[in-house]
Image 1 (cartoon, one colour):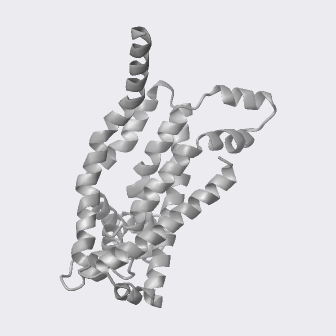
Image 2 (cartoon, rainbow, N blue to C red):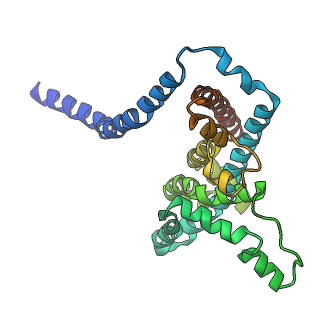
Length: 281
């Protein structure tokens, strides 16, 4: 009886251990994210009213939300297209040097986020490295207008958020059993068929995690559009920052935050449903 009791307690302890290890992170998230966010909404809405939301149904705000959704989706898609081949080569072709390649790949991103943005501003400006190089080889006669454009915003956002896609993909592909490749080739499948029908479906959890890890923060990004985009086009993050920083418009900022958070939730659920239907997970 004592032995059975000990086995039951040991099993319960083994199952509860992961949850216990996650409690500090969960408490940290509650104390420094959910409670401050709740306080912001409480202080911003003296009396909750739909009047705070009605101004944001105007066409200019709708266009800002649509533009931001498209920018965020484009950023996540391009990050996936760039990160997947890179991680594939590191994991399956890197051999015993794959950990070193992975470290070198992430090493530049250990520096300050703003430093990367300012560096790309110098590269993309009219007298920057790209225009000087293209003019020196004779491909262009006049400098290209790269900075202060939607192209520059997406380009820099893809660069800055690429690690958020690389990390879950690397974790997913690292666990992939290479014997599936041999089984697929033995059954007559080509490399492309093996990639699409074996590797991608089995690594879909990493793809999904990376896509959402890029999509969600890219939707609320304000530093890159402000600095690289030249403040020519407004985005969701820019409007939220503009309203919440003003003492008289904090309520509008909170209302717009709630509205865009709900829209982002709809986008995430829609993307999740579409991808699940495609890969039948």
